Length: 333
View 1 (cartoon, one colour):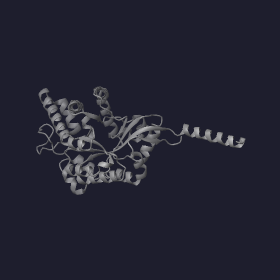
View 2: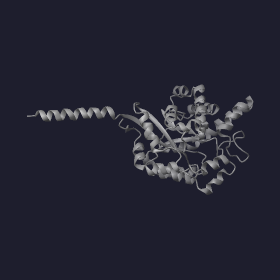
View 3: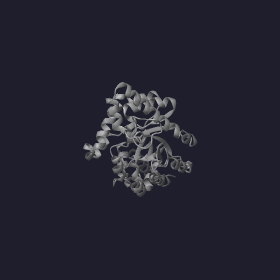
View 4: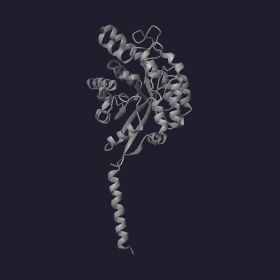
């Protein structure tokens, strides 16, 4: 016979259970802990591979014209079982051009115009030169796609695209990508989906940063060009949230923890957090002898900090990236 005390104990247990359920929210969240620039140099590639092997990176962007492309492909094929999400990092900023080009390269055949150069040339060139620029952009990106397609097919991955320094979001470039996506079926393309409210409320010191200015420019491109609508029309997906601009090179466990609290009431999300967990060797800096911005960028004291953060908190990051769909527990409120 069940006593009144046992009934009361069970009632209290059930009550406590439902209180916890109300306070601890679970929701399906696909989290990509992503590393850009895979294949750019051997040291950069090795740093990213170390993070993959540690389980703290589950997604990468490969550079078709990277200096260590062949090496990066060989190493990735050795890790087929890790089921790494693979993206093509379209690159119009640096490295050797894969297609004939005059408007995108210097006299050594190196891509050197990038985000700013392509944007201003598109505005200032006459119609005939602008058409040449558009043609060169299309041809260069097509050659990069053709070069990586065998890798995507070997790993049985759908084609996904993003771009070096977000140059793929400059309107003249984005239009070419949409055309290429009809010729080469594309599953997803990275666009700007960083939360202004979260970043500025949590990190008000970013308000006057260069990252916020670039984010504003990219948002204007996206809004005026109706990027999201165009992608939906072509049935191309994009992440609900992407962090790649404002806190680039400074992402931490604390940042992600606070963001998960911020989205605690949302469900069925795809989140891409873009890391740069590497630092090239001093000997590799000669690759950017004529590109002081890149040389200073890679020689910066910030380089390598994100790798240290990922590996220091390996248990936390590997738990986030272990499955594509994972029940992520928000903190008790």
